Structures are given as C-alpha cells and as structure tokens.
Length: 409
Ligand code: SAH
Ligand code: SF4
Image (tube, rainbow, N blue to C red; front, side):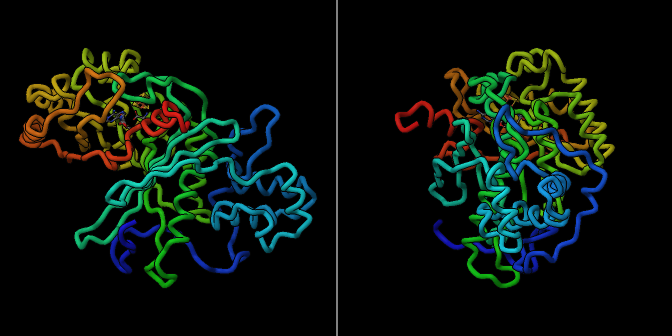
C-alpha cells in the first residue's frame, strides 16, 4: 500500500454493523435467523463440517448436540462470523471443553491464502485461496475513492464456484470448465479474509477510522445462479446483524442469464443488486459469445430483469464487455439501446480483458467512446469501467489460470 487509506467519519456509506470492539457476549439472537431452514449441508462426503458454513440456527443445534446450552451456539456464531476469529482457543468466553469438542470435528475455516498480488497503484489486491481439497479460487479487494480522494468503498469480488459450466467464449473461467460448487463458508471466507486484513491494518481504532468491507460483488469465478442455495446462504451470513451486517443493497450478484434463478431471486424480497452479463444486443451474436443464450434468449432475460426491477425497486446493471469488431459498432450500440429502452437499467461498458481466444481483442478507445456516445444519445444511462488491477490480472478467472499454468502453481 502506498498510503494509509481511511474512511471519512461522516461521509460515505456505512455498514449496518461496522466492526465493534464491544466485549463478546453482548449480542442478542438475530430475529432474521428465526424460522429459517438450515442451509443445505455443505459436508463433503466423509469430511468435516466447517464452522463458517454454519448459520446461527445450525450452531445452536450443534451446541445442543454437544450437550451445551443453546446460547453457546450464538456465542460461537459471533466469534466466527462477527469477530472473524479462526482460533477456537482464543474464543475466550467459550468453555474449554466446548472448544475441545469443536476442535475434534469442526475446523473453523477452509481457505488458506496461497498467493497475494497487489496492483501497482495499491488499490487492487488479489488473493488466491486454496481449499482443503486443493482447489483454488480467486478473490479481489478493490478500493474506490470519493471526490476528496479518500477511500469511501472497499469492495470484495468473490467467486461462487470453482470453474464454470457456461463456457462463455471470452472468459477464462468458462474455458476451464466446471470443477465444483463452493459452499457458503468458502464464499464468505473470501470476504472475511480481506475484512480481517482491513481491521488489522486500520490506522487507528477511533470512531470513523476503521476500515472494513463495504460492498460485495459476486463477479469472480463461477455463475452464482448455478450455485443458488449456497450463494443465498452466503448472502444471509454476510447480512446477518451478528455477523458483518452488510446491507443487502451493498451486495451484487452477477449472472450470465440463468433466467429461473433471476425469477427466484426476485421472489426472495431482498434488495440485492443484480448485474446481467449481456455483451451482445441480439440473440444471434449472444448465442455465439454466451452459449447460455440458446437456452434463455435475450427476451426471456429482459422479462426476468424487468420483474426483478419491479419487485425490488432496484435498477438492473447490464455488463457489456467491448470486443473489437465483434460487438462494439455504433449500429450495435443503437440496437442495444432499442433492446433496453424502457427498462430501469444501467449499462456498464468494460473493454474486454485478455482471454484465451486471441481473436477477441479489447476495443480501442475511439470505438469505446463512439459506442458510449451512441448509448447516451439514446438516453441509456451508462458508465465506462476500466477493468481494475489490469497489471495483476484481476479479470475473471485469470489469476487462477496464470498460477496453474506457471511453474509455481
Ligand atoms: N458468471 C457470472 C459472474 C462471474 S463473471 C457472470 O457471467 O455474470 C463476472 C463478469 O466478468 C461478467 O460480467 C463476465 O461477463 C465478465 N468477464 C468474463 N471474462 C471477461 C473478460 N475476458 N473480459 C471482461 N469481462 C469478462
Ligand atoms: Fe461462467 Fe460468467 Fe465466465 Fe460466462 S462469464 S463462463 S457465466 S464465469
């Protein structure tokens, strides 16, 4: 890091439950946990159940099953998901016997960070995490600065699967193929690792000085809608007031367009951000770039997005990666504007990052500007997002690919 960023005291977004130094044991059971079914068992065949996979109800059940009172489960939840403690021996208000029982069968975390890269400007930090079965996923922390150049957002980009089955032509993860689902614990740990680092490196402990994760985007490896249960369980963990207490509005799921998942999400009644990776203004081209379109064509996708916007009141973001000579002409911008006209939406233009396919090149700045102008003239709100941390390959799937294709592995 080149400088010590700090959160401004009164300005910028606040998390519902910024990390406190309040003594443990002062929390109350969360009403949002009541009546919920425990998320699907993340236990892999014969393996242990990790504590980060468990919500409060599951931890209460666990405490009872080990002969402990129910409230021990709540205390445990606060240690694991609120204080982010990874060492059972440091959970000071748990009786030693309980910690020993847990240690035998319930490791706290899955992930170990095996590589960290920081961009030259210090604003993007990428980690490669290794899971106990040797699988690796990437996760990225990005700083965003406000008008006064102070950091006002810390966004973590998480992976939701190891690999991805959807095979988009421009995406490195898609070319790797699907390996396995991530559990909710493996997803939240990606956030927890950076949150822990932000807390530990906060310049001071005074009010308004602490650094913490403010936003989470599911835009790393994998398709969140194809791992719906675990993704939603991870969202509930991240928004739990006894955990990090992130606001649902600060969490964005990005999907390549699994339409039934979007409908299901709309029915959750949560104001999560929704980003749709569109990348083409018509089915003919989208079929080619994103095979998922053959199953769920643009009209069905837009119908689901409209329902989502109506139910949540949130405008949907469309991601559009500009690929030179493929989807970046002014005529295609106008076609896109016609397709999106009347939708509560926003378009994010991103010059495509390096992919495995050498024929897919990033649009040059002139074409990008012309495309953007055509959208603006058609009154489609849009922003141009320069891909963050280019120098550390922060694009979808690329760190994993680079690591696995180098000698260091
Ligand atoms: N599977 C989900 C989320 C993960 S991909 C989805 O597709 O939306 C996150 C974003 O990165 C998506 O918008 C995806 O289209 C984009 N992406 C993938 N490969 C890219 C590349 N080479 N350059 C630019 N964006 C890319
Ligand atoms: Fe999967 Fe998203 Fe990559 Fe497509 S862009 S292959 S959906 S991760």
